[in-house]
Length: 211
Ligand SMILES: [Zn+2]
Image: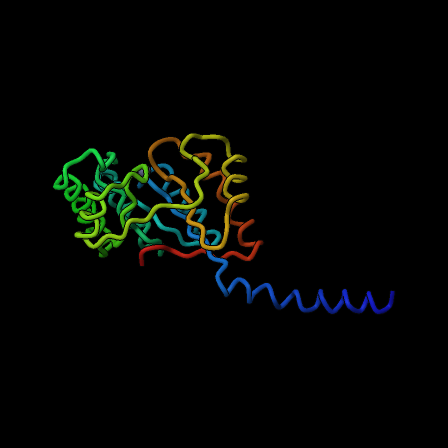
């Protein structure tokens, strides 16, 4: 019994310094917010991210940036990455090549005007891509970025469902899809504090995508 107790104590002692090393070696998660900026929900979500010291990536719609440019500027000022989610959220596969290019380039222009940076990534609406979308995106210097964890928060399944779908599926390196625009996002905002505190307690750190 004495030897067993000593072995358990020794195991517990080495487990404590191992946790920060594990975090440093790649327990990273990427939060992403699509379809903003929204004058109602984006500032609310920015406040929560700031309270937890977390940075995220916002894939914004050009026409929403044009309508609420100061919010896009605020997103960038708080250290988040602002990226391209097309001008008007069409299925880009249904557009001509030149229309795809103007959806991307117009959005670049309004984001650059507020952030001083040209987006380096495109998240195509619905994740819908074909060879035309890929080649037009590449020609405009864009990497196509999708996601790996989708709680379908846009369908408003309830705050608890959004939390459990994220927390049950997250892995190191996960790209989590959430929405700050496109409708009532109060459930998404309400789900965030628990998602952030739980991931932090599990040793995750948060990083932005696309520079
Ligand atoms: Zn979208």
